[in-house]
Image (tube, rainbow, N blue to C red; front, side, top):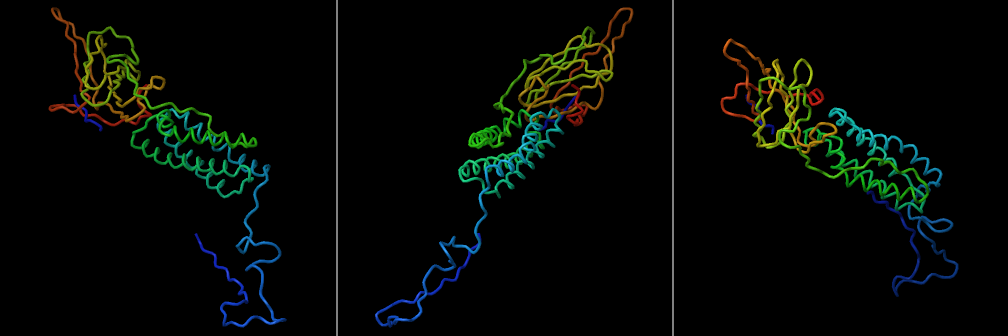
Length: 323
């Protein structure tokens, strides 16, 4: 059997002319002549240099209220992304988190915070914008299955998450402002593997048949055999390795396989570079007894393309892959 390898604007201000001596040839003003004095655009007191005064800084209470309006939505979006278990949910939640953070960053950037926290406010807004931006890139990686689990997404944006957490804590410490939107922890990028031939799920074996699996691809794989709608067994086969499952019982089996990098045992998924396929035809095991012989089936499948392969593979929706 064969399977293909997956591979600014400028403000102009008219100034008032001052009357004075420009050169020795110019006459000096005589007593009683009018003289222009003062600052252009002035009035009483000093001028800001612009026609309209800028907005006033918010009071601490008003600023706290503005942060509270957006806190739960941002925190919830980040937490929901971290809790995604299905790939479709992960895709949708990364998009939602990007939108919520970007929306909040734009709204908060338009505020004038209390002067004593201006620097921390700016750092917080910058961290929000940075995380929203990197989530856009991460979304592309999820779409092409470069990243396949929430843990992989968190590891990918871990630096920006940590920066946002630090900026939020700094702002909160300056006046109990609700800026603590990061409650999840991002782990480091890993490359975890099981032993070759280790069963992920091991049903009851005790038949005479066998299934030899040849994984000549460049990624580890998990092969899952399904009989009657239930998983009979799942076994881990490392790249460039083979393994034979012995004692397969009689029956018709649908054979699925996933391949990728970094096996996350808790969710039984590869976290990066994942693919999901199945063989188009079932594999039949049957034992025949005669007066003098016992005949059974020994099958061999390859998870990579070979010359002469006689069964094609089909893509499988990752959320429909048997667990």
